Length: 223
Image (tube, rainbow, N blue to C red):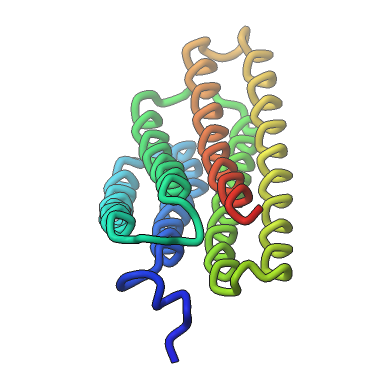
């Protein structure tokens, strides 16, 4: 027998579409550590943008499908605005990762200390972890809805939310730490390179912020 939730929605449920869309965000974000390493090794990184564009195209198809479904729905577990807000922030993640690559191609930083490189690589891993947790949150939303908002599923979602908040806090702290370390090198590095790297750090922090926005919206839905 088909699950009750599957009978409520035409073809495929919005939560399944959100989950598929989140996966494309995660796949794009998985490239971040490799992009950073390749950049500091002096490799060509523009090809990463082509791969991200593929993920973005697939994600756009899902977004259109979700909008079509919500034009037909008479009732849903959560409002159309909530679903579109989630997918808007997920879209922004893929866009920001693409921007991150393209901005990096604009300038080749010279004489960047190894310690700064390692901190930026660590920040990239933090950002990836925040997107991974966001995907888990979106996946868990599907289980929450299918369980008719069972307390144990809501508890799992809460645990993910706390993890995302902790990771986002770590990302912000490390980003600020890198910024301070960069500006302490103003007499050693090219000032343009310092500002450039600081902007890259800020862009990475914003990607993590978008992930937190998704999780916060989900928390509002289940509460």
